[in-house]
Each structure stands twice: as C-alpha cells, then as structure tokens.
Image 1 (cartoon, rainbow, N blue to C red):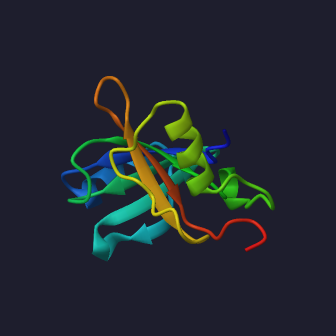
Image 2: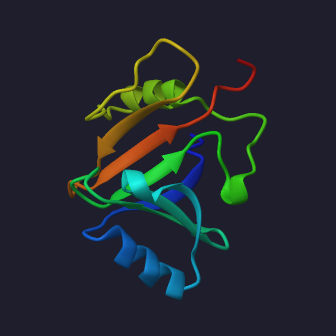
Image 3: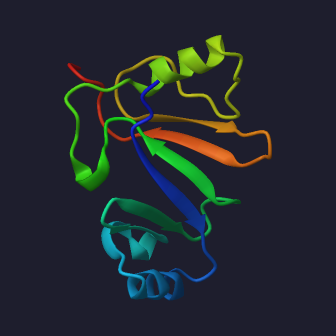
Length: 128
C-alpha cells in the first residue's frame, strides 16, 4: 500500500504562537492560509500542519500523490484503491472516501488507541 507523503497535523490553540515556535525550530511556512486558520510548515523532509479549530485531535496524515519536497510522483495509489485495500484487510474507515471519481478525496481510520489517521489525496489520480 502506497500512502504517500507523511506529516503530522497538529491541533493548536494559537496559530501565530505555534508558527513562531516551530519557526524557531527551523520550520518554514510552505503552504496554507493563516487567515483561514491553517498552515503547512517544513524543515528538510519533516512536514507539519498547524490547524486551529479544524480537528479535535492531533492527526497522522498521509497524502497520496505527494512526496517530500512537493515532488509529485507520476504513479501513485489512488485513495479509493487504498480504501478498497483497507476494507479487504478488515479496516473500516471512520470517514470513507466517495468511491466515484478520480480527483481529490480523503478517508480517515482510527488506530487502536483512538488516534486519527487521515489519508488525504489533493491531486488527481495518475493518468486521469
């Protein structure tokens, strides 16, 4: 199963304070919109998302069709294919991706400890 780029989506109380803290650790904003309460920051191959008011818990995040440093592979496993494989393995999504289509979609599963695992595809499937 190819899950794509990995990041941690952090639920933050104060986006500006969190941004300043992570920038002191060497992270730089590479995406998002602070006015809309979210940012994506990167330090080398480490990526974190800062989200205010969007998630209840910190979330492990995978992005099919993305890799570190925004290099988009020409071939990747579509989130719908990943969902079918998870279902075949007995893992039922807490939030399922719509099976129709080829574009952006997401699903969420919960690990045994209740930690959310988000598989969030932002790009069209290869060859579509």
